Amino acid sequence: MDKYVCMPCGYVYDPAEGDPDNGIAPGTPFEELPEDWVCPVCGAEKDMFEKEE
Image 1 (tube, rainbow, N blue to C red):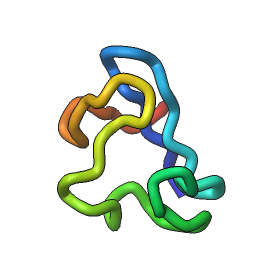
Image 2: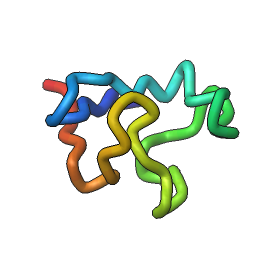
Image 3: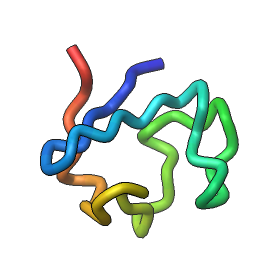
């Protein structure tokens, strides 16, 4: 699964880890994150993330 990087702060969303502090289970692809999910570090919305190359 692809990792996604928050452009404002550099946080990397890794689907293998999820975001358990915010209720996102490990194994959740970025595309399946809720629309209201935001970066746990800086609060940026999903459209501020880009696929890691």
